[in-house]
Length: 133
Length: 227
Image 1 (cartoon, each protein chain N blue to C red):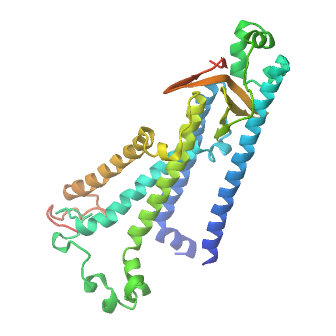
Image 2: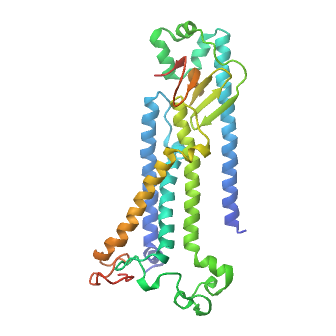
């Protein structure tokens, strides 16, 4: 094999492996963010739960008053149990739990929840208890 | 003429189009980045930097869907013009030369000249591969680009699905989807139109000095004549 061919193949292999490694790391980070949101809700720490929300989702909640108050009023029962699956595509992710799913988006400070308490509807957007507009 | 100037003159076609390719690819990157950021901002999401954008599936699917169709066009053109002719077109060979042609005409085997590539005088598989190398490479680049389009396409599609709070799909579902075939066929139709147009318009129209055209004074019926 000529050196240039070997270099090209090695570059493609390295990029591929780096891509796979990166996706797994990002999936793990998305799972942690979803679990952190659930843990904050279960601990009735709505301030921390609000910090885990994406700006547009938070703004939507704040239509009904301060985010922690609005979130507490919803009495969300989401993110129960261990994650069953995590999908990461580009800057978007979904963590699936037994009863519902959490959607997340990547921001400079990490993954933030864009929608939670989501139940799928065939061919239509999921019905979510919390989401942005 | 000095060495560098001679190099520029001798390779002007490749250098000019290669440079124009890089400039337009850069332009596409900035335009695509701005378009994606408009969508992201309207959804309350964080915009991406343009350096980061060129590594996203959003950019790569747009690039590869065009590449695959261009290389498909040249592959079909290289192979199709072995068997298909257009009377009067400089893009076609003469109508009585349909097929792979004789060794004498192709300067292969015993008819290879001292200037011929070594693979032309070699026999067997080596000559056979070299005799089809242009089409094979075009076909390989087409297939790899199309595969890359499908892989980057499914990521982009699923990113949109998740943004819209919908289920992502697997690769095998995506390559049968309307989205994939719409992206693919809208590129194929334009390439096929370009080939058909070039084949027939060059029968009657001329571009003085271009090897893609017949000489201005050549008859409309003259086939396989380059200006």
